[in-house]
Amino acid sequence: MPADRLRALMRPGRKGAPAVAFVLVLALALVGVAGCGNDLGKEADEGVPIQLGQLKITVQETRFLNPAQPDDKDYLVGQPLPVPPSKAYLGVFLTMHNSGDSAVRVPAVGQLSVTDTTGAAYPAVPSSTPFAAPLGTVLAGHAGLPAAAPRLGGGLSLTTPGTFARMSPTLVALGLVVVTAGVWLGVRFSGAARGLRVGDTWGCGSIAQTARMEYTSTAFAEPFRRVFAELYRPTKDLSIDFHPDSRYFVQSIEYRSEIVPWVERYLYAPVIERVERWAVRARAIQSGSAHAYLTYLVIALLGLLTILLVRGA
Image 1 (cartoon, rainbow, N blue to C red):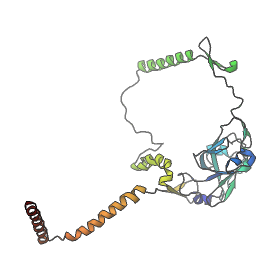
Image 2: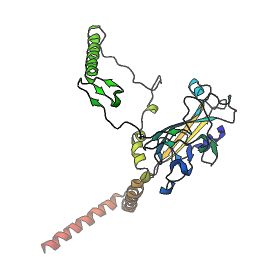
Image 3: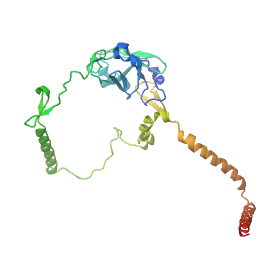
Image 4: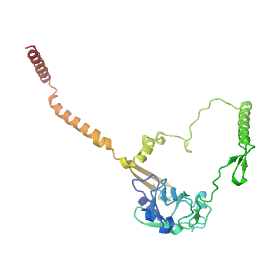
């Protein structure tokens, strides 16, 4: 994937990570449910599972792979290295779960692609590493699994169907009690210091914590924004500037997030606008003149006297 398309991959209305669309172009015979109204192509976002028949696919994470990092290098075994300056490898980490009884064939490499917001599609790269998903293979279902539940034998042992394995819950519980008591006695009589020690909380490896690293109110409200996304219609925009010498070093990150303020716009704003309008009109009688204020008092006093006279009559 060209590295200069990184900004094109950032789009509003998605998660803070690179918002790539993982498009699964599945044939009709793959899921066998096209007649039920399912689309042949599905778009997957990070953390949001999609259901393709009885096959559920969840994209856990999408990120660029750095061949210089040992962990990422293991994912790129067998791939052309070094990567040209205008190219980059994008890793898509996903899980596949067959929730049905019958077996389902997993999409092949040629049926998976990554599409950016400009519409450009990038095909999946075949991989034979132990970390690669078994694309194109058959994922077994629940059929054929033993329906019998484990039973308790006469010796208080838990036996699986077919006597494949046996375990004694009594011995396991007794072992846990012995280990727990042993740890407590070891700490109790080892003379370990039990004084109160005060230290900084874990800060994800950062040496010094600042107020900028604290959770904001937006972080705590994020679950509600996701649940009521249709109401608040949140939009997000993430822009990343890389260092001129290497695209693996981030120079600056700019993040913006907004929601539609329905209550403020249609409840508070009209009330505040009317109050301000009345205040502007009332400002006309607030001239700052003592003579005018005395005149108001005399008029008010005469009005009250008139009301008393009318009621007395």
